[in-house]
Image (cartoon, rainbow, N blue to C red; front, side):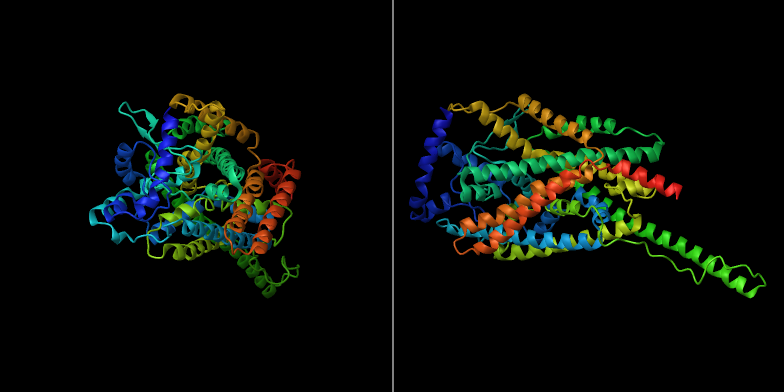
Length: 580
């Protein structure tokens, strides 16, 4: 009965816009959508009660106060994560020539497809009657409202970007009841999200272009990608913690103990549905990642400088010895022919495992393609729909330039034996141990937000399965949802334990098999389908290139999966160096 009531009211709401847009000024002001939204209808429910709820909840769910600076930080937040620590090892696997070329080719393709997605969004918004992508500047609202909006914008944005990816046929925002438990207080469908929520997400564009099948494919891809990233976290943290504990206590802690400890922490954190509760941990994680990157660069520079000074001192001693022998009466042959110069570490332009870099370079953009539309809609500046793509391109280009310098510098400092997890290759010292612990804490705190969209999609799919063909709305209670969360996290941990030595291959497989379709294939196909004047040949060429990259890199990665893992490879290289 509840669902029938909502459906009937939904039809009534759909008949309103034509009457309201031609009514009095008061009616227009009452029913007009907010300037920064592109929603089709107000919040579902009874006419009187739900208008009041929409007014009360609109401020909480709205994404507001989006300045250009905030957009830049949002892009950085979506782009920069622990995956950057895999770059030095990936550079060593591929060689600097292939790595740099492949990284920038992937960047160019990604920016093309991201702009295709933004162009499709703009066309869809402009095609809606009475809707324009122009948003009001922050000064258009009253001073009190704008100040309050700025105070709540960070919490609202976090909730916004998560629910934007998970809203399927039904969705909602969790809040607390009087007894402290969480419940679902807002129910809406994909075609009529509540006030203040964007309705033009990546999955919905896929739905507009290719129906329910297109939306299901994109949502499944996002789910698997998020789960894959969390899988790498389960491998990353045990490597990091085991190394830092060994350096502090000289005790070799098995990886599985660190893995079990992380599972115990992540299950309750990932069971939280109100993501605004995770704001504090997310801010801490962001600060720790920034500190870790700066410290890694500092340690790499210091290590390289110290190594060069040491070799230079040895070279001066050899050259001085040769000069003294020339002035003396010793007729023995000089211990060195000619002058000894400081050797530059040999970095190969092309290495045998170059194919692994394709997936790794694509994985770097995994968080950006799904959030470019929410960031676009959250921007509240004049002519935002024109300014944001330029801002986005420049920011992504700057980040990739930093990636290039970071990967090359750390590889040249620590050599070809640099670990997949860079922090485990840092020279011993208090700062290195601090960085390892800081990154471990940051990843633990990032995990719940990373897995949130995937868990919501899984829970919604399970509820749909339980509902079957009936009209009864099925919603899992908190305890049953926690059981689902626990099962998913334990399964990820089991896979992580089995592939603990293959982090590089896991990263490459995720990027090639899942990242290529999401980043390179679907956006141009959606653009070609929805935009009338699209260059369909160019879109098809880019999508075809993405398919070839996906198939080629995936097959090669799977074919070489049985090669020695990282620990065995490092042991072999260490023994070989010892006997030489």
